[in-house]
Amino acid sequence: MSIKRRHPNFKDFTKELLKDPEVKAAYDLLQPDYAVVEAFLKVRKENDWTQAQLAEKLACSKNTIYKLEGGLSNPSIKFLKRAARSLNCNLEIRFRAC
Image 1 (cartoon, rainbow, N blue to C red):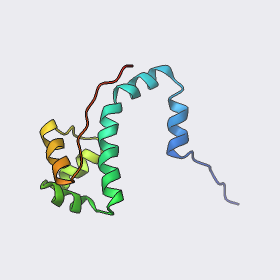
Image 2: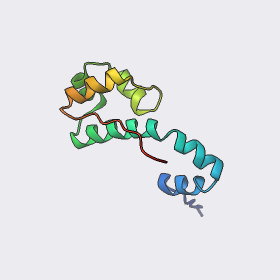
Image 3: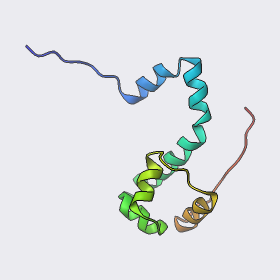
Image 4: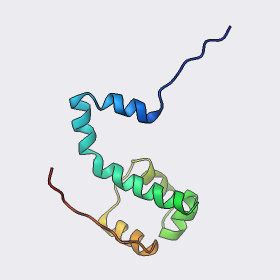
């Protein structure tokens, strides 16, 4: 007889974690970092590119894309501007009321 364990998916897991006010506050502080990661993942998926193909478009290394998508590095404004030009996109940075 085998025992099947139901593991929560990431979305459900995150939703449950964010019920804790301290976790939510820490998560909110990282929102800009997540937004950058999500933006690069989105453009890569929309174009069906590999990390290597995106790196070629941005004239950077595959390792740079790997670190960026993994949240292991924070791109400079200069890099983001160059990426926007290379991808024929607009770079939008804004402050909003909390």
